[in-house]
Image (cartoon, rainbow, N blue to C red; front, side, top):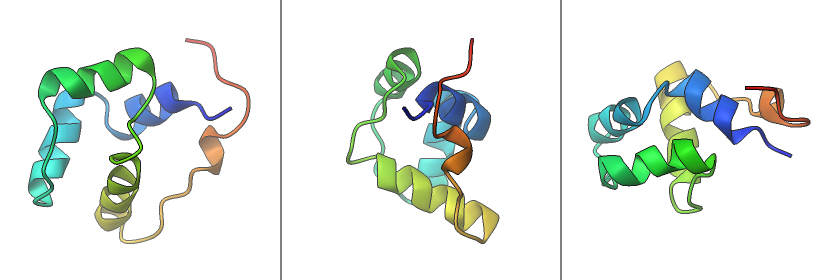
Amino acid sequence: MFDTKAFLTEQFTNAQNVLVLFRAYGVECPSLSAVEKWFTRQSVPGEYWPVMLCILELERGEPFKLAQYFGKRRNG
């Protein structure tokens, strides 16, 4: 299982930060309430998943590694 909750909170902190990064890269973004649901449901819609990974890659200047979030979900 992929730990989406940890991915979202560790990489973006909150829904507002997701929107800030989307806008910074000129990406059309959903509403704040929609992104808040991603955090609540611990799930990112398929059309936004690759966008988020691309933004992280651009922010870091290197490919973003997902393996740390693969496996058993952490408590919390």
